[in-house]
Amino acid sequence: MNQPFVIAEAGVNFYDTARQRGVSPLEEAMRYVDEAKAAGIDAIKFQSYKAETIVSKNSPAYWDITKETTKTQYELFRKYDHFGEMEYRRLYEHCRASGIAFLSTPFDYSSADYLENLVDIYKISSSDLSNLPFVRHIARKGKPIYLSVGASYLSEVDQAVRAMKEEGCPEIALLHCVLSYPCKNEDANLNIIQTLRRIFPDLKIGYSDHTMPDETMTILTTAYLLGAEVIEKHFTLDKTLPGNDHYHAGEPADFKKAIGNFRLVNTILGQKEKTVLPCEVVPRREARRSLVLTHNMKKGEVIREQDLIAKRPGTGISPAAQDIVLGRRLLVDCPEDTILTWEMV
Image 1 (cartoon, rainbow, N blue to C red):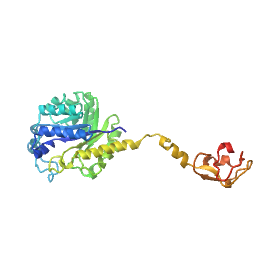
Image 2 (cartoon, rainbow, N blue to C red):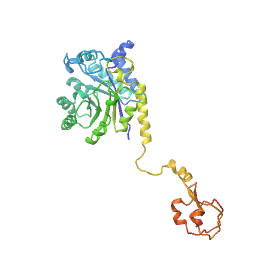
Image 3 (cartoon, rainbow, N blue to C red):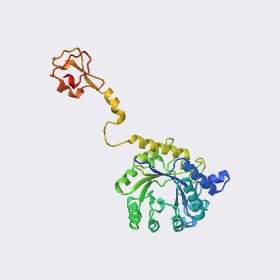
Image 4 (spheres, helix red, strand yellow):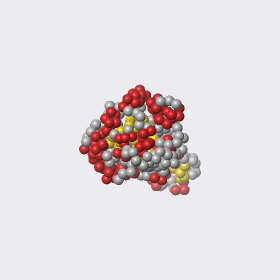
């Protein structure tokens, strides 16, 4: 297995930590970039939108309002929609200088268009999976698309994939996702990763996570073991903050732990061919058994079953060849505990 492509979904979390630290949102967003890079993350992703183009003013909340108390989507999005092309260009340039990939999910045509010169990969949210005119618009730009498939039926996923292919999209990744904030562990449904791999064998398959970070990052590790080639999780610099996406996001330490797990898994899986490994050659020889004489025997004596015992090391005749050895004569005198070799019989 190759290492998964890890995306830190910063979204708009930096607005809250900027307010907490008394710095500008742009300065804080750049700190998110630096912390993500230091954690070994491959890409950091933001969100590009304006409240008036993404949601009607009376759209109700669909998140856990005990953790994010804003009652309407419009009200929430208005809090975090102050960045435009200039700010994202500054972030893109900072990402390039830092050596981490810049991504931002567009939620309107204008954002999709100005991001064209900034992103190498377009990320499309689960919420836009059925917005086929928008999906086609992005697909026509000729860049890879990573599409989250939360809260969808397979028929809808298939429609979106067909639309992207028809518009000439060069690379498609489908990210299993559960559109629930936070997603309970029992709802994570990670087996869908293998379902998507079976149904769309020509596409990359990944996982976009909304569960609460677990102590050992076992959920993300399991997604990798099930075949996720792309792993995305919300990213914050303070997951104790209330509201928005902080409460189900991972901090840099969580991502470091997950990336360490991916590396360990990749190391221990090894090869599929069953053979003797170089590290096993000496232990194989010393820990296997050989046919050994149970007492002194003279040249010419016929070897009987009671004359033999199997003992370590495995430098002599293998016990697997005992039937071949029985009934043969010794060619030399042999004391008790002699490890038999083929030259002796």
